[in-house]
Amino acid sequence: MKALAARRHHRFAPVVLLLLALLVTGGVYAALAPTPANAETASTEDIETGQKLFQANCATCHGPNAEGTESAPSLVGVGAASVDFQVSTGRMPMQMDGPQALQKPRQFDEEQTAQLAAYVASLGVGPTIPTDEQVDASQGDIANGAALFRTNCAMCHNAVGAGGALSEGKFAPPLWDVSERNIYQAMLTGPQSMPVFNDATVTPEEKRDIIAYLVEQRDGSAGGLSLGSLGPVSEGLWAWIVGMGLLIGAAVWIGAKSS
Amino acid sequence: MSDYQNPRSPESSHREVGHREQHGTLETFPDPGLPEHKSRMADRDPQAAKRGERQVALLFGISVIGTIASMVVYFALPPDGTTSGVRLSTLSLGLGIAFALLGIGFGAVHWAKVLMSDHEKVDERHPVASDAETRAVAVQELEAGVKDSGIARRGVLKGAVISALALFPLTIAVPLVSSVGGDWNVSKFKHTLWRSGTRLAIDPSGRPIRAADVTIGSVVHVIPDVSEEERQSHEWITEKSKAVVLLVRLDPRDIVSTQAPQGEDWAYDGIVAYSKICTHVGCPVALYEQQTHHLLCPCHQSTFDVADSCKVVFGPAKRPLPQLPITVDDEGYLVAQSDFHEPVGPSFWERLK
Picture 1: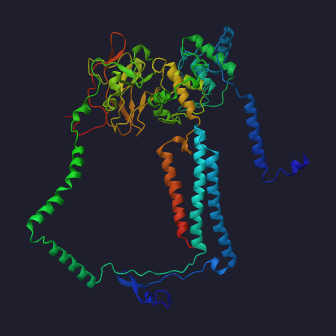
Picture 2 (picture 1 turned 90 degrees about the vertical axis):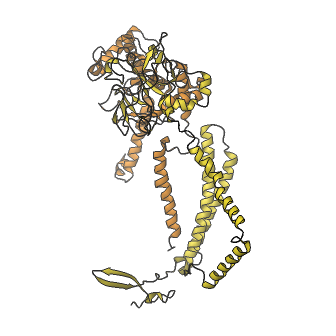
Picture 3 (picture 1 turned 120 degrees about the horizontal axis):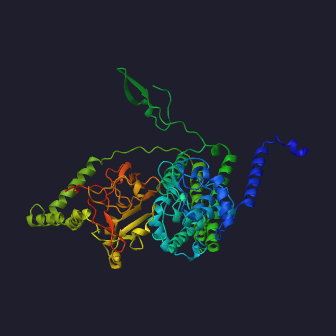
């Protein structure tokens, strides 16, 4: 301890401390990180616990019986899929008012999310949480998924799912890190600015094709550095600033006299 | 006049250059000549020359390593068909080749700069025009040629050669010009495939849409319901690009207005259909924000309010998106009441004629 105390003013001490802190945070998160939820079997008990959780955490905005208030919509009929999407991605409960609810570490564990979903699902018929088979990318048709994605999703989420800007601070998030289940639920329920793609307009098989296409994109581009897949903005920035800069630098070096 | 004498341009110091009028008086200053030659480190210090040699050798060495590395990579990391495999293969091969070439280039330039002779030489410009004698000979040759051809005497040949040269450009000009004006039929911009009773179908699968299937908040990208053969035809892509429609179902209470004239109903129970082609420069407008009912164009951020006749609320577009009048048929499928009532897409000269 004495040796440690003596070195606490060493110039690398802050760096070492920071690394240690990051390591501990990461370790604790990895240990406590939740596994995906699946609310298949909802008992009366689950619904009752879900109701208590709802009243403690959600009722302030959504009303004591989820009927909605001035500041938040009614949740009657949104279904378990919507609750599971919003709560498992940490978007709900919302941290603060803003252009849109942001993704953040989830506040409820798998069981609590399932209980909340069971409660909201008991209020009215709505979209249910998809089964593992419905979101199995290996059973999807990637080419058809690409065609569907280009028509229905690419205008906001970018042709390869890199995300993009909407108006007034809202944005369509990148889709590479979104779980298959959450992609399905988002299409089904239309969270926030996103429109709804119900099972009649995009069939469950077509949804699975889209998921297969997105899963394929996780590998990135075969062409090396994708520069965020953002198209002319980032590519132009690189070409004009980095590329031209290097060429000018080389020209100056060639023309300069040796010392 | 300065005392400075540049050994390479002795007369330059006597010339007066840079006449400049300043406050009404002529101010002159002497030609500064070329800057004094400075010898390089490598010329003064054998140690530095040795160092320069080592640096050049190192750069060429990098090239050799790059070449060897690219050969190793070529055989050790062939593209295995997966995305990451292809990326790894091409990236490492490219890096190897880059170092191989950059090493040679930088090595050669560094060699020339540091070690090769650094004598400064002046190449004086010579006049552009040839001397009088050469010009006289050239004119003589030309005159002799004209005389030899007899073009002044042989009128038929003169006419024939001029005709041949004058006509030849037609072989290039006619195909070029005629294809420019190949199709002056602007009326096709004013009509699309939509007819009274055409069913609305989902893009790209072509399934017709039932009104009951479109829930509130839903967006459907729509094409006219045509036969499979028609969708495989050559004209389909042109027709589709005019006819595409965005179908949205709003809560009927949210609808402020539609483009339907008094006494007509162009929507069906909160379902409205608007052309997807921006009235600015024709991009597909398709970024729909469900909560604000705003429809954004990805190209120039024109924003249309779907709940209020698709009026422009932001951006460079000047006109609302044309609305497609819709209703349902006996089987509950959504159908068009008619074609659009105005040309879709951006403005063109004959638009209102």
